[in-house]
Image (tube, rainbow, N blue to C red; front, side, top):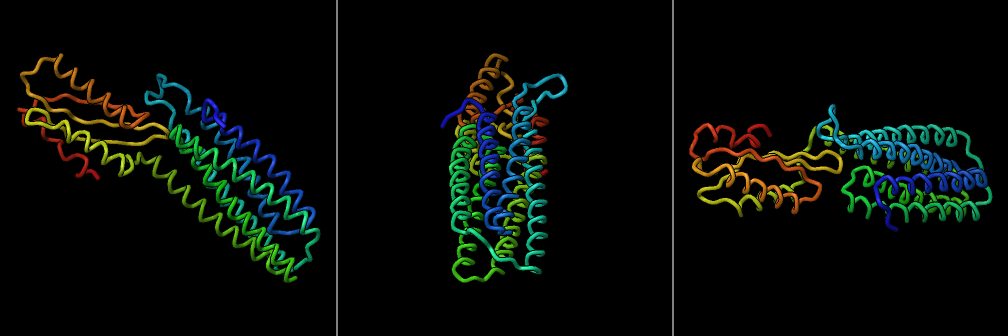
Length: 302
């Protein structure tokens, strides 16, 4: 499935969340399983997170303006941060419900049809997660990637719930149901913490990933000669966008036209190698000692 923008993929996620809420709530009402209730509650989190992500992607797509010269790309981090917090809140609610069921165990009913419905919802989440992962790679979107990984976590936890409730059906040990719900909640909290860490890194202007940083350094090394040098390389990631700035040192006797042409060529090469990248170059005379004052900026400040 191929849509024209990240927002259209989030609408797919919203639709899937609504469908899985209906299916999993139905499964819970049929069986009375607190494990399936925990699954349904996480689908509710999915819906709120998907709506928040749609808002963030809408804001991130706005062009730069007078008050936001670098655009609105960081709005995506607010979405992933919201999703992280909601995941943890849902997990705590699941634990609360499970503790109550541990204190007062209840028999489960109609497990066969309940598990079948839950498996259908799980398969739907798995399909949507696969589509979102492909879209996240295509658009370089942290929001789509976060939602996809969240859905994959839901798939695994839902599978665990189904297996556990299947064991309840086989053994009659009703205590397994709330224990499974607690295990699901702990896994959800771990996922939320990881997503929150990634969000915080983005808001703190994290540099490019190591593989992209290495690719950039190789590109500059191939361009380096006795007359052309580079330093003060700085990079950062903001949502789906990358920003690269560097100083380019050339002979002071070059014409402005020569220096400008080299800057244009270099910026184009970097933008081609790293898509969705804004490149800023600063031209300096290689003979001037002051041009070398900030050559180690990246490492000194790191």
